[in-house]
Length: 411
Image (cartoon, rainbow, N blue to C red; front, top):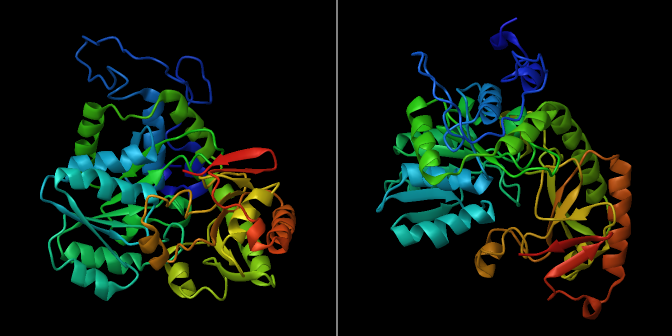
């Protein structure tokens, strides 16, 4: 059976992976090599130096490209090196970027604190409002960077509408698909030009690696990215690629379980008397539920919530969880809880952050694949501790939080 006829889960396991021709090993070897001997026989040589390309990395690139119904991806050392290399490859001094107003804090920092020094201007707009996006693109922009499911507010933008507006304005449309992965959302099928992944998150899924990838159906864009990756030395390492290859094999199974667990936890939180608000795409109360259902096949593993009362209760809860890990990452088999205002989005000015819905009481939960009753039990006891504390008892100035023996440095 050709891969074109295979289903997603089969491709997640088999794409890019072939038994080793010399040993018959089922797993792709880790080609931990810098140098590949020059071939003088006239055949085209694929590998010469691991800063340019590596067989293990190439296997992951083929797998990720196949999952996005695209040519092989371009893999990078981190998610941020992926988006940074993309910007270096496609932008020049005087260019303009339009981005979703709620984006990952590292993307905001790159655009505002780094690229502005090179005369690249960025404007952040509410991409969930097509009219506002259309007005923003009346002025030419080279890139439109979207997070259709925003981090961490979970605001949903109409992907097809945004792509159409971006295309009409002559902008290349870049979609950060880290939250949903190709298992739940396929931006290229909606017309996006490029898809960015932090493979660190759900694609790896086991808190074992850092990495990034970019997919596109435009070979000329992929060639530009490979040239800049070669020039800047931002390729993923063979071992990181090998670990990610193993993680991706269970991607669709994990995303299904993440989604089931997150819906169950979200419904429990919604019924808790001390919870003021919960946002999760699968909830009946989720305002953009119909739109989310049109462009993603399940709700995913991410939700956020706010406790009633003093926002400082969020910090107490963070210190009180025992099963959930307070951490900046997401997308792992373990449940992780984050306080965006002091962790992932602290580079955004407080006034701007709050205006976007990232308040001091907002908590982001990356729901893992543990038994959901155990996740709920942990949240229940942590909420009880947070609510029992008087505001004067809550220490919010310390940068280091501790819970269940795990330490989290808020940065």
